Length: 136
Image 1 (cartoon, one colour):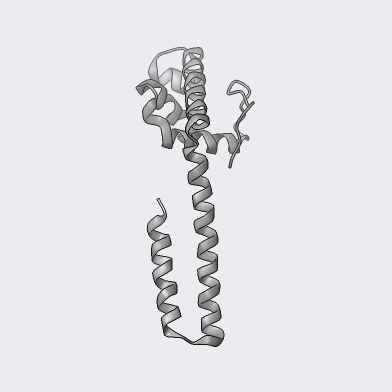
Image 2 (cartoon, rainbow, N blue to C red; image 1 turned 45 degrees about the vertical axis):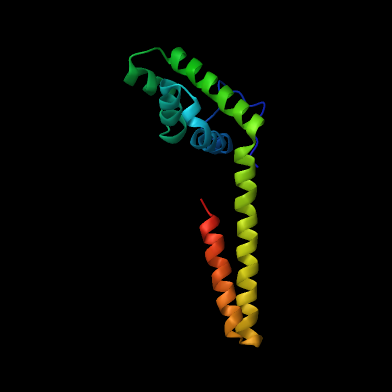
């Protein structure tokens, strides 16, 4: 799981892509829990890569007001994830699906190399379809 604790938005630099990805994912999961303006500013900042000044100018408010809104949004998103753990569970599920897909590939390769059993090929294909269905 990506970690973000202890990283202040105020000190966040554009090079800190791990935090940007983490907060963008949190926004996808919990964005509807934010106010409309918090969600809008967070989307513009984390997903559209606009600066605080650009967001402020577009909305006719101060840079500080945008920053304050983003700090509240970030706190709400991180707090919600700490309480629910949905993003952590989603990330773990995606990892497990990837591992299962690798196993399906190994079974199919082994079958092609030596077993040549059509029913194994069919089962591998069905299992792969189930794994594809599990992806969100």
